[in-house]
Length: 447
Ligand code: UDX
Image: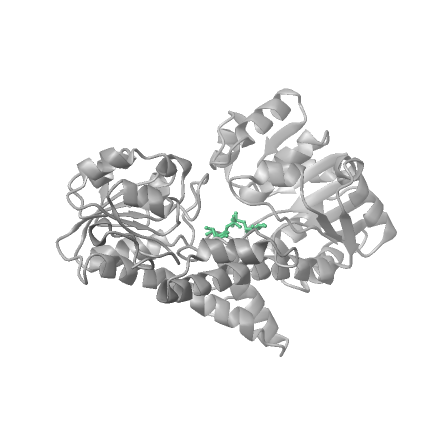
């Protein structure tokens, strides 16, 4: 099959590269000429494990191409995917669909022969139908079908998620579109991956409902973590105890500083707005959004409290800035609340992130930028772990202790066990677990 992918952002580039890995002939199109030039030269504009290899392999095999003009690739394509951005609109939180409709119009002008036009961006219910209207208005003669094919991949494991998904969801309106989409996903059918065909609106809502459910699950365990701290219980034991119930499931029960990233914050807000407009408000999701926003700010209070009530003049080292490990993505990262919050409270803050420094420099002021993890902690009064990069799990704690002025660790990701922290001689605050204080002999809960 010939595929055109409009937009080489995160979803577009990963999906385009993976479709070429399926054996399709794929052209990824973006109006940003410098981005396309970089991709043609084999430079990948995002950090995603394995992506560079997939792009290189398929470019070399002649199955993956890049272009700035969509005319040719779309004319030749059997399936055109629209994977342009849908940012949150300022003010009302709804997704801004202007890029999607603009792309649909250009695609409609360029199609030649039967083509299925697929929305891959996360879009509110009704967008596919509107894309169909835009296409019909622009080219009443075009032989096209519209489909909706939301993407569920996670940053950091996107290739694996794309090649071995739990399921694929495809919204269609005709048997012909269904057949075309079956060909697109043929390798997965052979793998017996469940492929769910629905109508356009259902596919659109499944994506929002999935992300919102996961955001709710995280927020639930985060609030339970706060309760655990008050009653002297370890949230990890609670998560394990409930997660073994298959109806609940063990995943997405890691308590932390609040969810961030390019999807959960945007999609939860968009679903809230959509539900309000439909006069079926989702009060659970509204609460999730509010609780998660507040949580990121509360992490500053947590560090301040761990430092005895004030961080003024204190040296604080921060490890991890990206919203999660294995990405350089800073969007809606808890660090964007935690770091400025500490700076505003008068702390001298040093930071390090393995991949996110370049992005972070555009967003954070007034901190010292360090070249490695150990550099942030020299003479520090406290060390705060914001993102759970593997390299932070493997720190030499004896060295950390030696470098710091005060052995105080605030771990917002629970990457150390209480025993490890105690044995290394740290006062250790984590999320939803008893405080460790070697001077007091034991953990708070055990006292
Ligand atoms: C998410 C969805 O998982 C994916 O299906 C969708 O297509 C896009 O949004 P992503 O944003 O890449 O993917 O990251 P994910 O791993 O889901 O994490 C999202 C946020 O939740 C991160 O800030 C992460 O730290 C947080 N999180 C996740 C927790 O705090 N606890 C958990 O147990 C899991």
